[in-house]
Amino acid sequence: MLKRELNFIGETPLLYLVATPIGNLSEFSPRAIETLKTMDYVACEDTRNTGLLLQHFSIRVPLISCHEHNEETAADKILSLLKDGKKIAYASDAGYPVISDPGARLAKRVLEAGYKVSVINGPSACLCALVGSGLPADHFYFYGFLDSKPSARKKELSRLVSFPDTMIFYEAPHRIKATLKDMVNTFGQDREATLCRELTKTHEEYLRGTLGELASVDAETLLGEMVIVVRGKPETPSEVTEDTILEALGTALQTMPSKEAIKSVSQNLAVPKNRVYDLYLECFKKN
Ligand code: SAM
Image (tube, rainbow, N blue to C red; front, side):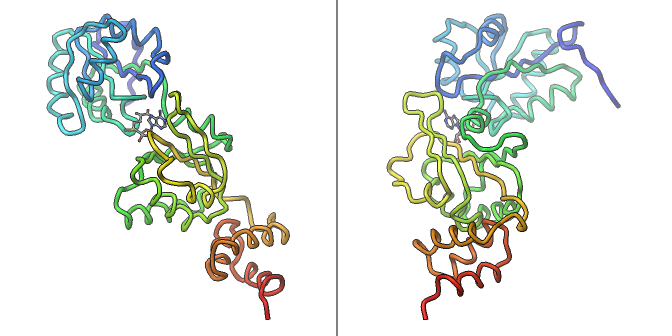
């Protein structure tokens, strides 16, 4: 049944979902700080991390631990505090709770119990990366983390091979090399992409190029937190000219055998393999 809620009118208790900085502490909003100062409790993913953040902003409020592994029991406790009329906020370690972080189950339980939730906006690595990527942002798809197991990751990527809009992936530094390699094998080495590293921090860096170029970057230099933004599948095959195919093929043949190059160009430009093969025979094959 449809429910309409005016968040700040009426007596119903409310849980604040508070976004926190993804690096640069100056991005903690005045509204977030003011809200947290007035809370009876702040529930959080990691009491040590959030404790340090609150200490930095002179916010003295008792903390409640609520992470991936205790979210349901922590939700019981938070619900009983809301019932007693206590003011409570929830924060994850960085960025928005819920977005590749705990908080979704808590919010669902709070709503199901008839209480309200309100979001205090702030930074998110996903939007920051998209905006800085230089890739189309009219439509985009936030994927979050791919599976850590190689076979499952490849399957997930293969489902996205024809996706037309920009895609945003989170990745950990120890898996970045393997993930970029899988992306090259799935989307093709010429697919445009931006790797956004250490956003809002001193070593913030954007690496803009193709997946093939990103995959060949020395892994030792890809440290810290990172987001990969990948352009969607290029437009319809009819728009792809011979020159475009020949150029892509020429580049691909520099780094891979002909069979692989033909497959990669065909996938990446979304043109039939035999069209690429015919051009290969005509222009590249040595007799
Ligand atoms: N809740 C967060 C948000 O709203 O963006 C995401 C948390 S998720 C556990 C952590 C991942 O977000 C990292 O592995 C990385 O992919 C991305 N991330 C977080 N902070 C980042 C930063 N400063 N620069 C680049 N990526 C970041």
